[in-house]
Image 1 (cartoon, one colour):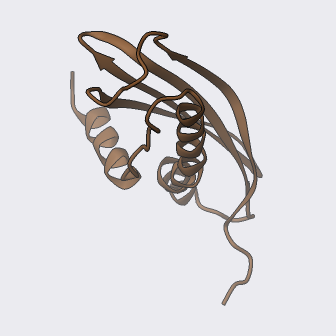
Image 2 (cartoon, rainbow, N blue to C red; image 1 turned 90 degrees about the vertical axis):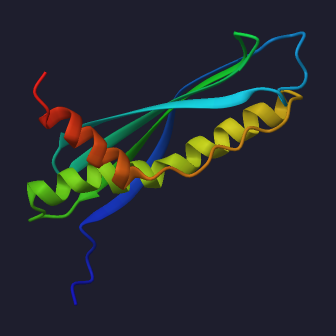
Length: 141
């Protein structure tokens, strides 16, 4: 059994964060949390850098009462000989799944400190997200 993993997490970086809540709204209980996630990557072997950007907001009566944007990056060391298809799968699924808990914690911490009910983002299925993204790319416009 090979003891060297194909990818090694080197660091997680907080790249950008923005938070806003309406001053007159202290309860977001009637609000539904919405989430949009964007994933990008930069590969300069042996380094793979994956960025996950999450936009989270809650609306009440058509107005955004809570809004948070968190952008985090993960740097991974890629072992020699990793095939491109394996690298693609890791960058689209595993790397974001590793970074997302850090994003979730940042959102929870920001909202808890804001004096509103803590926003707890649900886990995401990055396999499903990658499959849907591939289907959209393969469909003719």
